[in-house]
Image: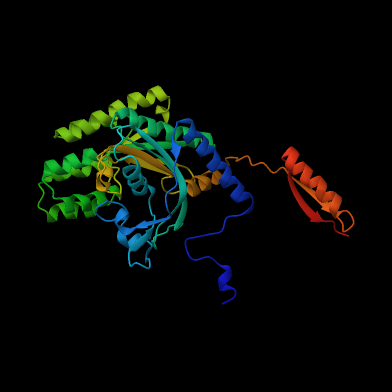
Length: 372
């Protein structure tokens, strides 16, 4: 029992020493860039009512939530995802405002899943949400901020893959798919499980031509020229508008001078069903999954009573740090603590000197007894 108490549960870990100093430094650099873009910091509770992350909201599946009860019998959950929490706050505090709102956040999120694959159940996240602007310029600002934040943190070799869920939704609508079939097909195509997607469409008696078009979305990834091919494959206005939006987005990203980091993936879909338009993920070497996720969610705030468009992103800080470590990206941490030794006889004088240096000079002083 005693030794067991020394260990943490599966999926969480201690962070200390230089590793923690590097983490704090990277968080500070990310925060600097968020502040530079004019985003106001906000802190939300670690746990919320269950309904904030319910199926209707379109966030994390119930089976992956840490759920518990308060003394009143209400079901509470540890937040798995910041976006619904920020949406709730925006609806609560800015319900009557028509102003554009820029909010940034930092904190831990929790995922109760056994499919860890090297990931943690408790992870540090930092991000930003731009609320009240449905323009392509807002999409571009969020993606440009993502690029600049990663670069400012020290990462230079990364790629932002951009899609638009409206493209796939348009294809599904044109095929006459019901919502349940669309969501299942979205899961298969997002996971590149083409065989399961084909079996599903066969079971739904979807004609061969339509099925091929839907399956082709999984191959629509690459540079800007893939957008023309995507436009040709689609045969509906919603998908065409989605492609046009991506082309306009690229034009604005060129003004930010971050287009070199951008690629496109029309088969990119998310487990979060609240995304309605542009969606993106950031990838780099050294980790097996995205270190950044984001997108547009124009209907989410309406779930909390405020009809307002929004777009945002989140940096998975632990994964970013892991990638930087494996790429040997230096994180410069200041270790300017002065060690002052004392004996029984000199303790009073050494303490006075230490207090003076701390209070007047702002020095970092560590007092240690002198070894014999």
